[in-house]
Length: 139
Image 1 (spheres, rainbow, N blue to C red):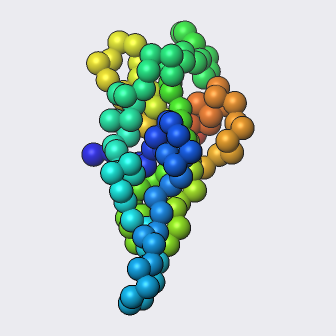
Image 2: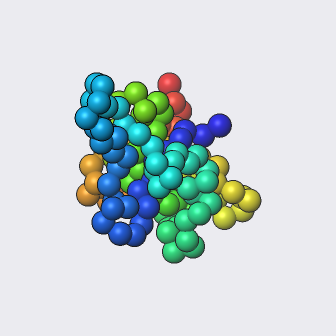
């Protein structure tokens, strides 16, 4: 099971807002927790990746391997992690969802969530995500 994410719908000013707190009716305690509506439902990372258009995927080489350069297709987009967000009083900050889908595979194979800045270059984001394997090899 992949992590659930809230993806901001792509159109309209109301669609760019994260889930909001229900307006207070004037009776009882004022609501303090986020409330999901039909436009703000969590999706799995796999659902998000499969819904991306073909032009969202970019072939990136992240380093030289022992025989050939290591290359794969990647996509990235900004999401908000939706894990138990109904317990929060304000939305989580946006993060990068990085997805790897090698051309020879039937579907996406790897997913990363990253809190790196929005202006990070795509190839740098991939290189940092893949850096973990180089560290494990050194051990």
